[in-house]
Image (cartoon, rainbow, N blue to C red; front, side, top):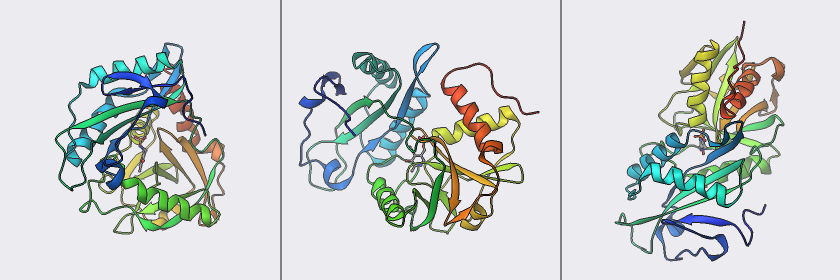
Length: 296
Ligand code: PMP
């Protein structure tokens, strides 16, 4: 996949520069220690023009991640949102995936830095998994213990755990992994939150050992609007396997159905599932369409 070409611009510390001219210091803590924070945001081509979905929530989370990681965050978030819209305009992007990254300058010690840099880039990116329902496996890797790292922050180094889990799943012939937490409770996917449906109700792991997803929060809001009972609770791998249906959700993945877990297939039809209803409602929400589906 090509993320940029010779004309692509990115935003770096207050300026728009060509992606081909961007340089990083190879003596930086971010590269050596995974000590950086980032966001994944989407912009949609709506009937109101290009709109960045929940821009404020994403930049708030970026600031929160920096605070949790002791990385300085010195920028005005309103200004960053304006610059992000400008970035899309300069690159003529209407539907786009946006990646802000806060990274640290040259320093090989393990001391928290006094300065940091921000880069924002964007590219066209289809839904991360496409439309196909996924065959997933329960990973042998667990999500990190929240006492070892602030797991509610989107810290670059956390994604080593994600890459290991996805790589293991693919080596075994699955599409993606599902990770448990240190207590053997269902946690999340390597880059997405998870919901399961059982007897007409929706369940999702409570906060504490997962990234508090912005899509997850949107789904919980949509459930209220659509009168779907959604329960945040501790769940197990067995609950996932015994469910009627399940799905991952995240900014990049949007809502994607799960077809099987460790080769246990869901027999209920996806088209009739709460996940499919929420998939349509989510699309309407991000596209700013007024008419939500009403369940009778
Ligand atoms: N969990 C993890 C580990 C993630 O990387 C992501 C993607 N940011 C999510 C959940 C979903 O978060 P969001 O809906 O905010 O994209």
